[in-house]
Image (cartoon, rainbow, N blue to C red):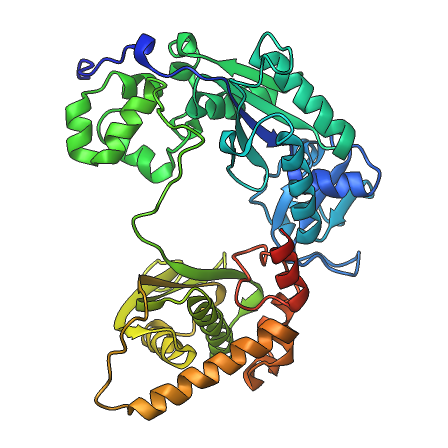
Length: 458
């Protein structure tokens, strides 16, 4: 192991009072509260595609589980229906997802947070996690510490919504998040505080590399190849070698291992590049090639609609096809992901032609359960590059047609104008238009009129 080659002076690092607040088992808690049940005591799972017949097993994903359900059945939020005991226990509540409810509850909770901080000191990290910088709020609420204010916020959220929250407290967002994930979720008071003084005793003693914010299984393998097996190893590795091997990610991981994070919540982030895409988990295994093509065309139409809505064109189309969980092809793969470069377009027809070209080239009667479409290399449609094989008149007609389709769908809803193929067996767009967020990957472009109105209201 290399000697530590870069040292941080905590006296020169920014110290703030940051809260990372998580709504405990959020979807499951929302369902419990709506049923008048205690989120911490009921055995409840939120599951997509549950069967209407209690004697049949559902086929969907478990999107959320209450703490008692996790404890009783050994499941997580990435489990499936088959992971539950069957026949289902009498005291198990199975709830289909209701995204409108969860989004409404999220808005209520974030409105409560905003009574403690202004907009520049709040950052919504996900549907159930939010960062607050309460440094300037302590004196206003007559609190001697962030820990005291965290308790007040927890109490207010519970009284007004019935939702339990856990809170990580730190000198910066990183330490607050690490405190949340590694301690507060297991404490009876649902709070934990990690400061710079706790780096050696707490951060370096995180048991698994993957328990650390920003380290997944692939990054863990790369670190293991460098003889780094713990956060303490990471903090005492050779910074310059780590940066040389892993680039800016290596430098960031090294700093994070020392608890260094110079992020301020008020900062705005502008991504270097943007992509528009969509993915979905199918409601069953698809084995019919024609049915799979219907879904791909629907998704291509959706992303094309989003491109036009954002006034963008794409030069790169990608398709990802994931097989059924039990299916592995002759090459030992569980799916394929390919992309093609095309002339800049936001035409549904051209995007679908590219997608089906990829699909027909690599599909060979595999059993499909996941499909994803992605458009990258986006640009503004300021200029139109003419194709020698297409007249300017035909391109203009196609643009006019797309505009009419988008206008009708925006005014009356997606289901008022659909392609005939979506009415055939295997079509998913009509059913998914009634969902919010699709629970699996974004419905923008095929939302119904009510959902579009709800977005504007939000």
